[in-house]
Every structure is written in C-alpha cells, then in structure tokens.
View 1: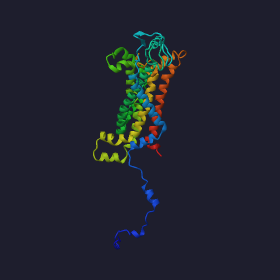
View 2: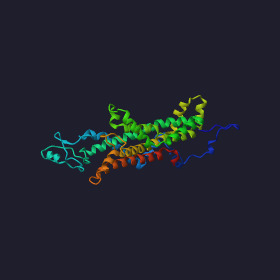
View 3: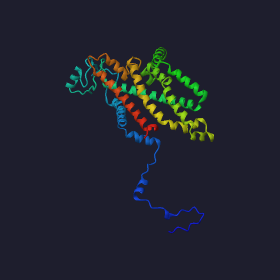
View 4: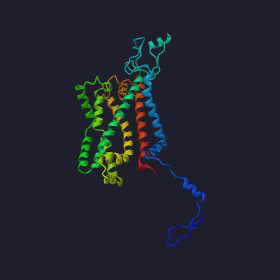
Length: 352
C-alpha cells in the first residue's frame, strides 16, 4: 500500500526513511520481563536462596514433628513409664533405644513396647515426647511474641511517623522510657505478683504454662514492640513525603485510609523481615528464662527447662543436654537464616 502524498504542513511520517528491524533487534525486543507483583518477585528471589529454602524445609519438618508425633507416640510428657499398670522404677535415665528391666521381661514374654528414642529422664518419663512438647511450647511462645510485636509495633510506629510534630516527639520519648526498663527484672516481679494473686488452674492452655509464662507474654506486649515501632516510624517518615501520599491527601482521604492503603503496603518488606527475626529472639528469651527457672510451670516442658534439668546429669547422661540444645540451635538458626533471606529478597536497597 502506497503512502499518500505528504502535504507541506503535515506531520505525516515518510516510511521510506525508515529501515526494517533486523532479526537480532526483534529478538531483543521480545526479551521483556513478565508482569509480576512485589510479593511474587520477592518470593521468587527467596526461592533462589539455598540457605533460606533449607531453613524453610527444616521449619516445616519441625512443625510436622510437633503436630504429628504426639498422635503416634503412646507416651505423654508427664506420664511415668509403667509396665502392665506397674510403675517401672528401673526406667530411670535410660540411654536412647534402651529398655528397662521390666520392659525387657515384658518383651521376652511376647509384648510390644514403643522404643524410647531419646531415652528417659530422672523421673522415668520418655524424653523424646518431652522434647517434642518442649519444642511446641517454645515455638508457640515465639509465634505469639512475634504477633504481639507486629500488631503493637506497626500501629504505634505508623501513628507516630504519620502524625509527626509534637505527637511524634511525645510517642518517641515514651519509647525511650520503655527501652530503659530491664525486661528480666520486670518478668521476675510480674512472676512473683501473679504467683500470689492469680489462679490460672481453670484456664486450659495458660493454666498449664503457669504464671511465669503469663508474665513473659505481658513483657512481650509491654516492652518488646519498641524496636518494630522505631523501624516502621523511620520508614513512614520517608514514605509520607512521596507524591502519591500528597495526591491521596488532596482528594480528601482520611489519615487511617492513607496509612492502610498507601503507606503500610510500602513498608511491608521491613515488617516481614523484622517479624521473622523477632521469632528466634523470643524463642531464645523463653529458653534462657526457662533455664533460670522462670519459664513454664512443671511438669510442662520447654527446651530451656529441659536443658536446665539435663545440666544436673551431664556426667551420667550428656545426651539429655544435647537433644534440647540442638533443637534450640536448629530452630533459632533456621529462623535467622530465613530472616536474612527475606531481607535479601524483599529489601529494595539490596536488590541489584
């Protein structure tokens, strides 16, 4: 088809002055990145990190262990081993996969007994199931603490950063005061008060954990959110000056809507990373408090209390300390590596 004759003042282009694209230029034009979202792009980068993927696999296996194993192991964390209804006093401090005298006699008579995978403790209780329940308690504390820190820290930091001025000044001075409070001393004081004033026996889950864990949860809610609040505030101070926030203000959007729809979604990388790194910190805090005797109430185990009880029998059975210590190291290391992977994947400043 021929081009019509170009008028003098027309903006029509003359196609004869253009050359056809070569095959190489066409291939270059075809190489375009597919449409994606921030979350999908971050997850794709996360899946390319072998350490982060390995950490995810380890955490999935740990979660499966604490949920599935209690359904198959016939022992309870507080059950003293017995054979035919008779308490077995010879099942004290057994080595892994070792049977007591009564159990060996019962097996010789044709009976079947589930093996003690990690042996038994000084009170003739199966140690494997206690480690499983201890891991469950420690993970529960870590997840609960991260949720508390996430909710309080994000709300407080968002309001402080968006409001600015005197409101921000007052709220940040409150954060500085909270930073100065010694968390261990507060936990000890609350534990003493709750032990004398609260009766938690009727509460299903909290009652088995004890007043020490209630004080620990309160300290997480009162003290541990300040780091998250500072991170969110710092991000919002820079984000709220962008043009799209000004455009939302100009059309009459309310501050709550602006924070929810425009500001917090752009802080999601910082929030995800800080939450992931808060979980191992809370697990480690619970572990050393339980090691000091300020953790869960007996006979409910946690990894820290198991390590504390095993410390007294290191000369006779050192494996009792190895098992809970290994679980603590494994979980904390997995969450730390996952947090580093999330930071590398979602932090725009670290992207190439």
